[in-house]
Image 1 (cartoon, rainbow, N blue to C red):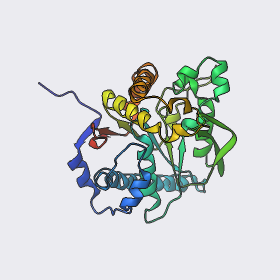
Image 2 (cartoon, rainbow, N blue to C red):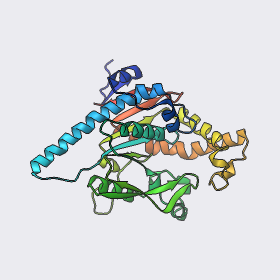
Image 3 (cartoon, rainbow, N blue to C red):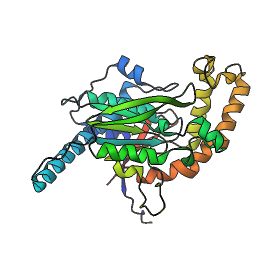
Image 4 (cartoon, one colour):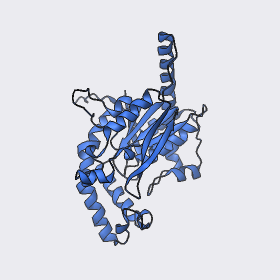
Length: 311
């Protein structure tokens, strides 16, 4: 039976690992340990097999982008302001995309040309809790309607227009809210990594205006993937472990969960996953996977087992 054509080339982990060629590992075991997400176990072998080939691929693509920029300048007979190379990282809550973003940033800043690399998360572009409460959207936090997508599109547009300084709002996970008046300053970086569940989602439209995708501004996009049952398990495990750490802080939004028993905490986490996060994954996040240039597919041990590269 003929196999249906796919826009992706699928590579096993050993096949992908072989593509690192002579890319050098610049992270030590303590470096990798410091970059791991909570309740994750990324090993140095994972960095070598998965992230070094990705580092090499991005290096080739960034070099090609610089050549294209120079060709356009030559055509125009002048100089245009340099713009950052923008990499998007998408995926479900608890799938490990934040760890992917941090590892990638750490590798990229250690490249031979020592680029300036900023990491921006889209959590800051959530509407503040007061706005979400007013709109009865607190139970939909993380869904498309809970984000100020127009503000995110403006941020991306200014970034890719070569604006010298761009600012992004800041989010506090312990407070579970946007920090009023605090911003992240993005000052002429060479590379920007934008990480969040919503980066590849549907466009924002204004009456009488053409639709714009946030993804219109990305040079390369990565989707971190895993079967939903694995992600659910990781979400519950993380929730249980956080009781003794982040939840233990009396100022934390989640402090009320710190005294739950194991059974109570597991039931609470499962309910939150099933009623909110899994719904968001199925309806809004997972459908964006096919827009990514690269898909990192994980197994039950959190390790990447295969890679899908858009042809």
